[in-house]
Length: 141
Image (cartoon, rainbow, N blue to C red; front, side, top):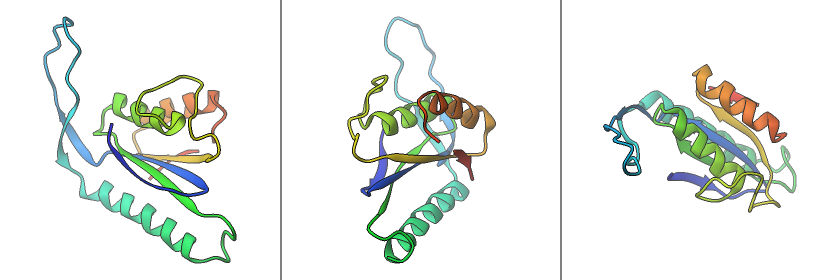
């Protein structure tokens, strides 16, 4: 799953539906299903992502707010599909492109929180999994 990121001493995860629809493929269960194809770009979610990035840059540029610390982020497009939200969250937790339970490659860079979209189906599911792993606030925009 592709995403965008910015390095920092503390990472904020962002999972938003930058696309509001997906192309569904018939699954015959004889081969691996194809990757999700996203459609219908969401300007509102894109603006929310830009707001998060802007806020992080403003905080990082003001050395009085977080002295000796920088914020970074990892952001993923859920395409309004629960499996994409979970895949993005797994990548944030593990630091890898594949989900590896109970493993974090980026152990020295803490994931401080996750901002998710307003769909309770996505946010509550992610909050339960992150809670089990003792991560804080899946918050929604």
